[in-house]
Image (tube, rainbow, N blue to C red; front, side):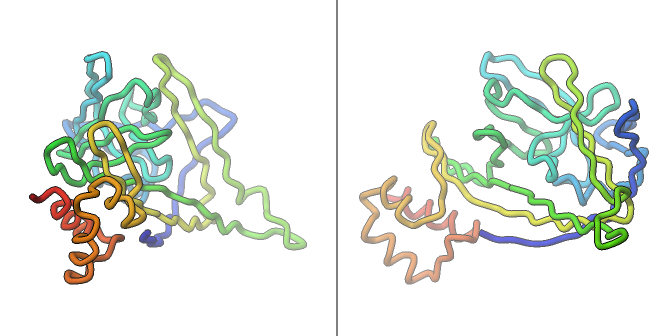
Length: 234
């Protein structure tokens, strides 16, 4: 599991108790925030793209989309507001900018590789936030450095989250990544070699030799792709 750290210094003036919202203005596939917040620090892509949600009942919906690293979900634009996509149990997949996301439990896994024969390599992202708030008198955290978060529910089960971040608060963001394999309709975590051995018993012995010969690292997507291709080979 790979980890990397980056820092977010965000200056957003949002009144938690009021009705202030994060408004956006879209131009084709681009989105601009009124607040001073770097999209690259909160979202997977630098801009929002035209995307589609395909539901299990065959229906679909289009909107400007981006993967939200803070909420670990898909954000989209609705009535000039950034909202979080919910109701994952009814979603087949989400796609935008040639990315494909598959619902898994309470989050999304991104499709990294399609090997054919209903075999996919998937990536799970999980963001952990840790705040370094400013201390007040007697070492107590000052109220002005607190983080307030609340949710807004709109129609169709759409949930919108807002986070009020004081500009003096530094947030350490740890992004964890884990890989999964999907075979037919089953999704398994690729955290051990034994997972592939159970899924491909005919490659059990030769897989270990392949890993040793090619210096395979199970934490690297490139090496995982090579292992899966080897397991699928005749």
